[in-house]
Image (cartoon, rainbow, N blue to C red; front, side, top):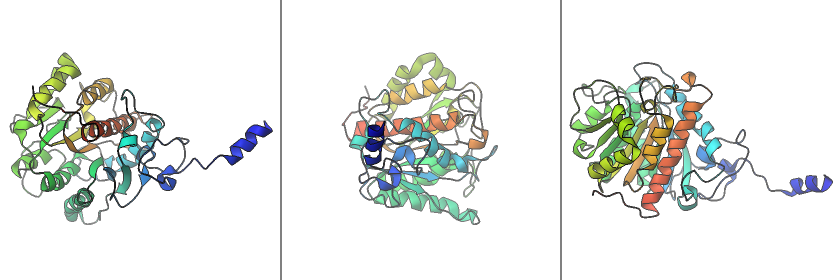
Length: 331
């Protein structure tokens, strides 16, 4: 016992890797119930330069039309991510953190007392990350945040394909300048940020006749055909186009993800959502987000844990394409 105690005393400090880590790569192992919070124990840095992917929170929920609370989403997702940070992400055969330089760049700052300035602040925050050379993984926040983030990505990459998981199409017609989490993709099409003819919406189960040309795979279609068939259909649509992936957690049925502002029954299970995402290996991702986690309505952190697992899988998708060279091409 004394020998063991001495060995413990000589062990290096294995806590607070978010601060003490020397590199942007490598697996982090420390008690998941303690330590400085960052996504998956990534090194915390306000400067994304040198990172392949910068993870950032956007704690905004002023645009929500039902239950608020998504401003607390980034913190909850980071906390839940410690549950998946201790080992290589299953079922992937590689660890994205061994081949991707990844930093947690903290949260986007904006002045909540000047709501008219917030969209531009989010866009500027995203542009700063992209200008550093890093790709961006955003943790929401309500779904409105995707619009200013898309503006930043389109400025860098040109018109994008959009891969959108949601219970809602978010294409309701809107007037210019309004901030609403149900109209972003109406504006995105109108502004020429995305091309709906090479974009897809998955898990939809609310009525909106204005599809704007998006390919829609509703929840019933996904459940009837499965992840493999969906991936094959998406392969034909996305091809080699640069793609932005946005995942509204209400794509998942509230039985599995209750902590969200606008829950809709009849959605994907957590297993179906993860299977679908993992079947997208090789998609040409240039940016990604997971949004609409509202911790006040969560139970036992199950929604935040799903969001953290999805975000981890997004990093695996990015690594598969941009580090392992896997392709996701049309047949």
